[in-house]
Image 1 (tube, rainbow, N blue to C red):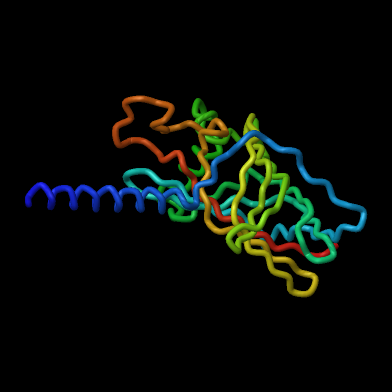
Image 2: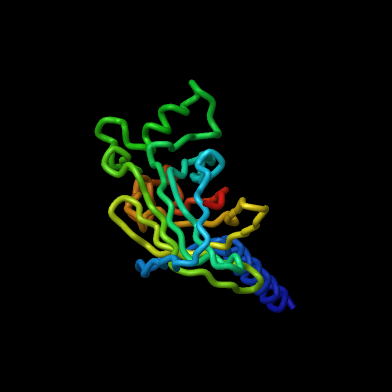
Length: 225
């Protein structure tokens, strides 16, 4: 009897663990080698990104807490077909615009922003080293529909790496205005050489590590050209 109870308990634990792992990775975007970017046709409808109303929200985690922030989209275009299907697109991200939103001025906000941007002497390469790499880019390589969701595929170029990623997006049109917003998704920062505090790169970090996964949400407002 005790053996049967133990076996049932073990099965339950395995099932719960499997479900937990599945939930943790359901928004994980596994990067691949870069793909060929799509080109716009001569009849494409062009939307220019409104940089004042577009942003990238980020979230980073570590055992002692979470930090959140934003990065500005410097420029971009989205090209669609007559039936409003995304045909191609490209975006430039201003890496010098990194802002931390969970800390107030004087509470470590400026120090963390400087560390992330790499403007602290002898810590330039810890994260994004914006003086050497002032911008990142994203080029659309494909669009697919699966399980009722639209997935945007593209090459993310950051620092010295170009990797292909995909993530679910919601696209809506209101007159000459397009709204594109991704669901929150995770990328593994180490795939782009952002290795500071990574347990998968460095040993003996104890609880002083930073999660490899960064959560990203992309919000784009664009106007018909």
